[in-house]
Image (tube, rainbow, N blue to C red; front, side, top):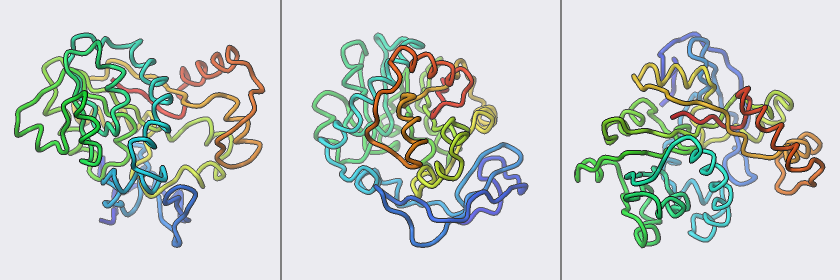
Length: 287
């Protein structure tokens, strides 16, 4: 589908901000340019043409992570996710709750929550089924959840919303399976992050990708959740990388996997906290 107006607010007031190649996997780019527009009404950035095939996590993770195996998922995500989950645990209580993680992968977050939760559930592609259901109840579709009339106290949707094709339908589908007074936790990549502020197009060359149909800011998130009558009880920045990573990215002008520790952890954490407070972090957390 090719959009001529904003897919969220339907405004036709928009600006073209990108007409170039997009990253299409692990260190590969498209052969043809793609357009990204900026809605002047709700502040959303979005691809002109959505990529529907990458809704399939078996395909997506193989392209972008190099493999969709359990081993690869755990090696890439386990420590990273624990750091982010620990921040969420400071805000909400998971004890004795029925928790669903949508887009759970190999369920590292659910593994961390298993001992304190009443029950844990995962939703993802069936390639993860045999592994996840050893410890958790596993679903391969929202239809399966609805058919069996499951509802949940807490739903985790972490770095998922930006991949959707119909974001309004997606969020409403999560609302439908939420218990009364339940919580949905969204972790959403922040378009207006410090990397973009400092690096501009050098950052966008790596950040703009075929798998992200949407690029959200605080303003566009606020607009979306208000439109869908979701009460936001908490929002904050989440800085996923250390300041040393940022320094090395600036020096190299490209994504980096390894970087020297020029600044000690205490000072790095203080700077990261300031970045989060001012919501120029790499992600935003909405509850």
